[in-house]
Image (cartoon, rainbow, N blue to C red; front, top):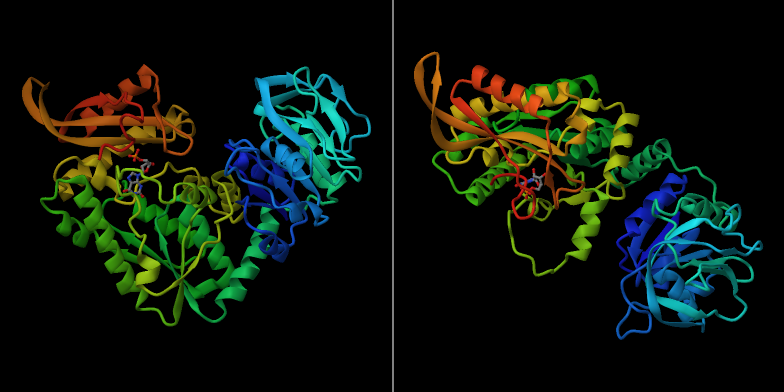
Length: 509
Ligand code: XMP
């Protein structure tokens, strides 16, 4: 596998993706992982990422010298290149003019292994303030741009190389070739990593780790937990107990859809219809955080009760993804305010004294989708919009009653149906209807009505951290509004939410 040492670049995850796209498995670890830990896992090659610091600055992240003498092929990118130069006795200095954006390789050394097949004039993407001014002894410059004499270099045996530009971004059109040269030609790696091989090795690992023990998992019916459950079921069969709790706050027909999908997949679920329990606890509650707390606690209670029915449970499986892992590292201890408490089941493993299994921990969202497809999970689940744990509770502003849940389910189903019909579903990150606690006057068939207002929300986003409202075409908006007002009793007005995040949030509560 390829080890990527992270010096804090915004592009580190992209490097990992590009390496995997080239058919080689890769993992990101912090730059200061330490030689001992590194050699234990015996990476076949190492990539040093870029980063925001200056290598000569105080307390800047340094590269351990032993890493460079371990005989493992190394590619340094941007800060990574500077770290190699600095560590091996070259010189790095602040540049007079910083170089950002497009540049062209005016010179390419024909002896370069890394740049084999790249022609002079090739476009590359630069983003740096510092420059290498002198190479380490014996190293050879392999390319230059107009502004940067040492745009890339290689050691005499070609096993240590560096590029000042970013081969991992799309604005370096030959970036994939350069990374492939590194992986194939320099590191001698074969492109044998695929979803099929991932499934095989992961299942083996899981079987080894679990032994005769049993595993519980919470299934929400979303992409991540569904893929996790099917993968684990493949590994350990009926020793996995996926618990699917219907909290009464799911979308229209959602529980039935999840049940029949998993039946088709041959995975037996432990289904708990707890709608009454949740709705009972929520009676009269208006405060959003209180709703979340009640739902989170009730879920834990039910999950514990259910788990107790199974013998020898030692593990809890979770569908944690790679971005969750990385974010939680970089934000650890950060002084950020709590806007909403998103994670409802955080303390579960310690409380129940269970070990965690996270088989998707190394994957990105789109990799999880291709894994799911490989496992035979239908698109309806793999491409479903994200849905919050507290479900419709945070989309019913004000008090939650069974009647209001039913009204919202109907309205939401109509909106989604029309969005799908218009071919917009996959362009939108999340679309849904919110039921407001205000009533407005309308007129229907000469009669006065005094009913509730529904808001339609649709956003585009890549991770949900920021979002912009999605411009659904007017005709589609018209159809959605018409149908909701005509078909859903209790709603006589539909409004469209045109706020971005920040300053708003995606959900209304
Ligand atoms: P906000 O509303 O904070 O939402 O902009 C960002 C993303 O998180 C989802 N969300 C939640 N997910 N429990 C969850 O599991 C929650 O309490 C929760 N609140 C919001 C939201 O749907 C969006 O995808």
